[in-house]
Length: 249
Length: 310
Image 1 (cartoon, rainbow over the protein chains, first blue to last red):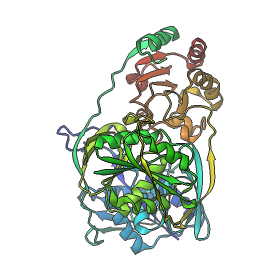
Image 2: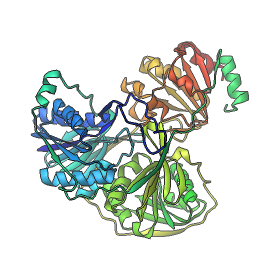
Image 3: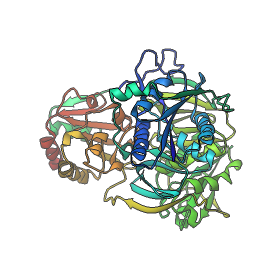
Image 4: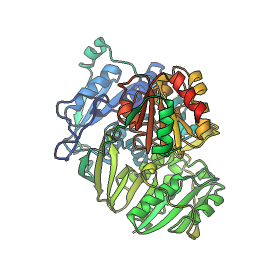
């Protein structure tokens, strides 16, 4: 069974995002970009399926500018067998990405798509669910455990207040939560080997997908800053402040 | 404009999240209907009928909807969607799961996790873990929206008298079936609805210390318990205690952060709390930059002392 893993190039999670001075977008110039952390977890899940003999091939896909090749090379170094870049300069929104992925799924016929549950840049949490919808497949979001069976999978999901286990029909889309696994790092020999693995480029046009944005960004801004307060010297003063100043207890 | 608010419930109780989403709907304006979809949930529908400003409650019941699975919820609402200009749900584990599926079936964008209604087609939402707010306008004919419940003050529980309509013709996609459900038994308020939240981080050192120090404090304050991602990853508490960018977003009247350094990802989940207290031994911890009252000290001494005087 082939497994398809979409990976997104995002601002590294250690860097605090700031708006551009004119509010037209987020400042990314010159800043470190990395693979979305939830996509690393998705990659790891796919690699483990391959290591256990349940998956035969891992195809990593990224949609965006040419620089997304870096993210795909990382995926190849981690263990993807080949990569596909859907190259476009258009700002892609989740619905457009889901449509691009659908076109590739139809071409590649994977038995499973494993996505990160959300990208840490736009925090949309949509693409996997949208892809499942467009394909008419089952979906299991926020997965913390994956167990594949014959034609079905048992997926444990993180929900409000606890855990839910679903039995879903395959093929399906799974999105990963934080605690599904601990992703590995790419080793130097594997980074070298990744340079020789196949990386194909296609475009939205060749996939016949309309990727025009549906949401217009009016502006971005910094949220109102929260004013730091004071340091209290001891518990007695804290209690006094909470009772008499903040009046919360 | 007619807006459909999808109720958040557990088949027995209408959850408070619904009243927050309703507030967002009222900020958009127009007629508001509420959908209660589930199984054996007619008491939920009765509660929804009294919500202020709601003119119609649609009740859809059936085995296929018992667990609010994404595939069946989507198919159900797809059948109703064309009557509405806006479809709103909570940005909860349930809403986040099925609403994007619906949006894709309708070939429209979803606007996730809104915190402000700027106009009926323009909304503000946090991105980059809340470090930035983005204001976006949707050109789609139907707006599919999830609402960050803490950003909208809940409407009252009563005051309305909506008519009840039954929705029939549910089908089961057969794609997915719940085989197990393990809910943590809570003897405390729910994290997202609590007036006071006591939250613990790596500084507590162990699951035992978390319990020994924070449970008595939470008991005194009738508080919910939360945690940083570090505390969850270290196994101090279950996953659904996590407050932050990818966990729960809370905005209680009082948030007490104990042994939490204050990573951006954590601040994203709590920085709109009304009053924040931080207890940490490191005077330079970033949590102090957002705390109204910071207490630098050993939590092993400070927390029991605070518990004792409350």
